[in-house]
Length: 502
Image (cartoon, rainbow, N blue to C red; front, side):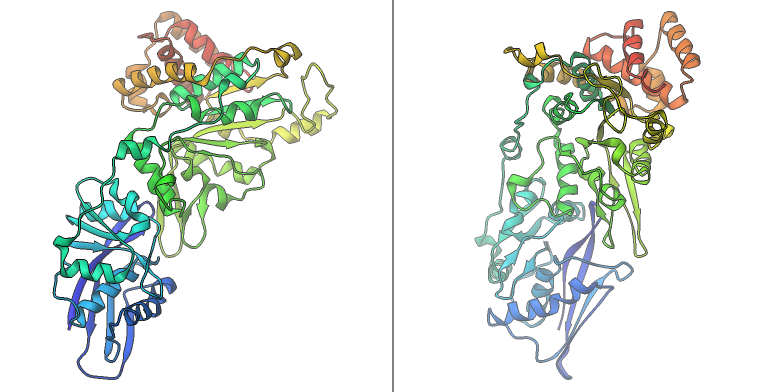
């Protein structure tokens, strides 16, 4: 007997519909074959499904069985095909009286028939909704994640037996529902506060500008001057993620296997700080399964690279494409996957190998050749992609011993939030992501401003990209002051944050 049920295959952060066709022959020796470009994990599902069905007293394995995963022109991987394969076998074996045509199935099976959570369920649920399905059956562990998607009924189950009973008697089950705002709200919390940062008025100002426009930030200064402390407080002053941003970020984390329950849903801006020994694959993504890297996991949040110049030059150069395009493409023999990489880069570096070049309290011990070799790891094209460059000096002892707190993250966040609302109303994107067409429209200068930027471009040999970033940063500074137009003072402030290298 033939049957067909539906599932989906995760490819990147999206999913593609897969038809699970099952045929149990009436004659022949017992066999179990699976076709349709299934990888090892999918082929192993034969043993899990066999044991799970037998343990709920369903035995359909005395005849030849063929399962086809269609379309057969792309490789399928993952364990989410266990459940649809089991359902297909139960249907073909005549063990069910109901229909499963309006339901999409996804889930891993244990040998005793219990359902285990799978990666990428948010992408699968969105695929099911897009394909016109009204219902999806998922493991209970994935219920909250799947229920984020509106317009489709989510039915969570703990065992295979429950799923089969649902097919026979669907009216006896109610769909799982969540309050999306409450679900994300309970995960919104930042521990670090800018009130704890002593001194560093210029660096704090740069952090505020960076957060308001999602501009990339480079902090150069001696060890212990507060670079890391400032970077770790950036997510706490950034505007809340929109629902679309939260779903996009959660999809990436789900595909990477980082969402196991409702506590892992991404409602706060992500913050990732990979070690300086990280490889290209760890940062950009890869492996044989083309998994997302740190640049993708940090989408809509902050990627903090401490000890920036200790990263190998090859690793740093791989950042150029995602910084420019906001996405990263990973090519493998079997497939090519594109992941979002819309992060804000915050980088911290020492000015020299010993760390004390220009420090007023400690003398630098490096030679000129050592300093040049150290700084040569950072190429001009990469520096061009960083909007704000700020020197972070050692904190004065009077500031350190002061009992008064600095300005709190809550106060800074209010200004950042207002600036973001202005940007959203004007163009729908952060200023750092303005296109050239939008730049001409929203970053017009008066005669004095035009003269300032032309003089700066000649004096500091600004590239076309640096010129563009200067205008975008100036637009953000103007937004923080609720100014309709970019004024000369906004340009001059923006320009001083490129004086370190240009």
